[in-house]
Amino acid sequence: DAKTTQPTSMDCAEGRAANLPCNHSTISGNEYVYWYRQIHSQGPQYIIHGLKNNETNEMASLIITEDRKSSTLILPHATLRDTAVYYCIAYVDGQNFVFGPGTRLSVLP
Amino acid sequence: EAQVTQNPRYLITVTGKKLTVTCSQNMNHEYMSWYRQDPGLGLRQIYYSMNVEVTDKGDVPEGYKVSRKEKRNFPLILESPSPNQTSLYFCASSLSSTGTRSTDTQYFGPGTRLTVL
Image (cartoon, rainbow over all chains, first blue to last red; front, top):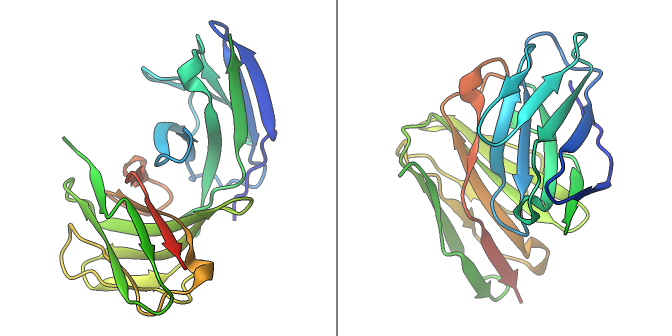
């Protein structure tokens, strides 16, 4: 079973890059790492996912270490609207997204 | 627009009065799931469905029922709601659910805030 640990909270200045770390040391070789965010009480929003290689899309970049034990979500130019709880998720039993407490990111003006 | 919809978005009810929260997706997804979110406890899975007529319990299934008669719909049923089921509920869907495919990405609905008095 792959479980994840993340910092409880982080601050980031508006316009700067936000780097959110996640530890998933027990992830198995073929499990993806997913990142979601939740703004207030809205439905969790998909951001990005990856397996081994670094990934980039219009929202963010995902850097996965070579041993796959950890990853970092990068929001390149954080805005106030990026203030949210960010969840790093690795699959458990192939059927269940297990959401931990996530990281509460505050983007400060 | 590809989406997951839930109804109602807000509901206040009384103990013991049966209710159904509907969930529908228009992406032809095989997998659907219900979560509840409570302060300090995060998102917890209630039930999930791998396909039509196939459902299974998640982490907190007590007091809930589900059905999957059609691919697009996955209603959550509370036969006799109690105050401890006051929560924020989310439905989600994905094309697959293997843990090893890119198509496992889950998409969430906007949520249903339920209050049981």
